[in-house]
Length: 608
Image (cartoon, rainbow, N blue to C red):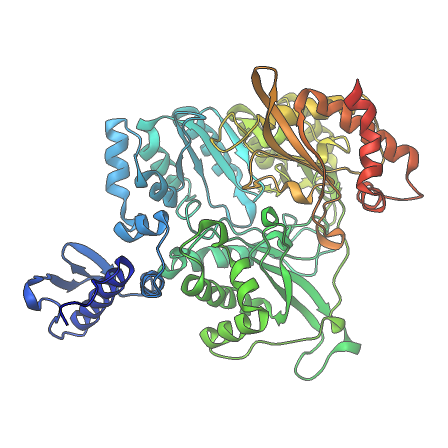
C-alpha cells in the first residue's frame, strides 16, 4: 500500500472539510471529537451561537447553510472563489470593532477586508476616490422629512456635502474620509436608517411602487410589503449567506414602474377576474412570482406560473433565498447569480425545491387566467399629479442625474413638512416624490422647488435620463457618466421639444448599475484610443424596454468617442421624428428598423 499516490489538493480539502464539519456536529451534540486522534490536536469549544474550532468560529444556527454550501463545493472537488474564502475566514457581520478601530486610526481597510466591509455598506472606492461610499437600506424608498434633514447634516459633517439617489430608490453618501467611517455608521442609526447588507453578497434594498397608497390605478399597496421583507432579512441570519448579491421588488400595478422584471425576485400585482376564478383560486388581487431578472446579463425575470397572496410573499421569498444560498455557484462570480441556477435546473425543479423548503405546494395558475394591469405613465415621476386622496397632489422633483446638495436636501425636507405629509419617496428613476400637497399650495411649492435650484419640470429626455456614478467615483467605470449625461441632455434639449419620452441610460461598466440594456438608448462606457490618448467613449444600444415593452437593447455602434456622441444621437432622433409612423414610440421605431438602417441615420453625425 505504500506505493499509493498521495492525495490531491482537492481531496485534502474535501477530507479536511469533512472532518472539520464532523467535529463541529459532534461537539454541538455533546459527543466526543474524533479528529483529535493521531496528534491533530483539534480544539473545540461550544457555546452561544456556534462552535470554536482551533480558534475559528463556526455557526450552527440558521446561517450554517452557507457554510454547508461551501463545504459541499469543496467536497465536489471544486475551488471556492476568493470572496468565498474571505467570508469563510471571517464573518463579515462581526467586524464592528475593526471598523471602529480603523476609523479611530484614520485608516482604510486592506486586502479581503475591503470586500468584507461592504457588508456594512461601506465601500472603499479607491483609486477613483480615496474615500468611502456608503449605501443605505431604505425599504420601499420611503423616508421622512426629519430623516432627510438629518442625512443632509450628516453629509456635511462626515461626507461630501451631497446625496445621490440610486436606481434602487435608495441613497448613497460619497467622499467619506477614513476617520469618518464609524461616524457615518453611528449617524445613520441615530436617524433610524441602516446600511447593513447594502453591499457585498447580500439582498439589496427592497424596492416597491413609489406611489404606493396614493395611486388611484394601483391594485395594491406595496411599500408595506417591502418593509416586511426588509425586516425579515434583518432578522434571519441565513439571509446574509448568499453567493452573490440579490434583488427583490414589488410592483403594485400603478402608474410608475418599480422595474420588478429586472430583479432576482419580482412580485407583480395581477388580478384574477370572476370569469377566470375557481374554488382554488377565487377572484381577487394576487402577486405573480417572477424569477431570474438580471439585465446586465441580458435576462428579465420570467413568470414561474405561481400566484401568491400578499401575506405569502415574504415567506416564499425567504424560501427562494435559502435555496439559492444552498445551490448558487461559489466558484465563479460571473455565474453566481440566481439566473444561472434557473438556467441549469429549469423552473420546475427550482420551484419544486422551493416548495420543499416552504413546506407546502405553491398555487400554480395558467397565465391565461391572469389579468396584468397596464397603467404605466412614463412621465408620472416628474411634475404635479393628483393623488387618489381628494384634493391632494404629489410632485416629482427632478434631480440632475440623481444628485442633490445637502442644502437642497434640507430645502426639500422643509417642503415635505410644511406643505406635504412629511414623506419623501425615492424612485428607481433617480429622483424623489413629495406627496400630500394641497391644491391651494401648489404654486408656493413650485416656487420653493425652483428657489433651491431644482425643478419639477423635465424634458422628455431629462425625465428618462439615468446615469450611474461613473469614473468620478467608481473604480470600475470607463467614463464620467454623470457629467456626460448632463452634456448629452443639454445638447438634445437644444435641438428638440418632443412629445414622447425617450429614456437614455448611461452606465459605466459591465455591472450595469444604470441598466443600459433597458433604455430606449443605452450607453455603456469604454475607453477609446484617440491619437496618443485614451478618452471617454461608449458602446451604443437601442430598443430596450421593461414591462409591456420588455426587451434587451440591440448593439448599434461600438467605441464611439463621447465628443462625437451628442451629434450622433441628435441625428438618430431626427431620423425617428422624420420617419416614425402614427403614434409610434421610439422603441417601436428602433425595433422596426434594421440595425443597418439605424446606423445609416448616424453616418452624417460621424462624418462631421
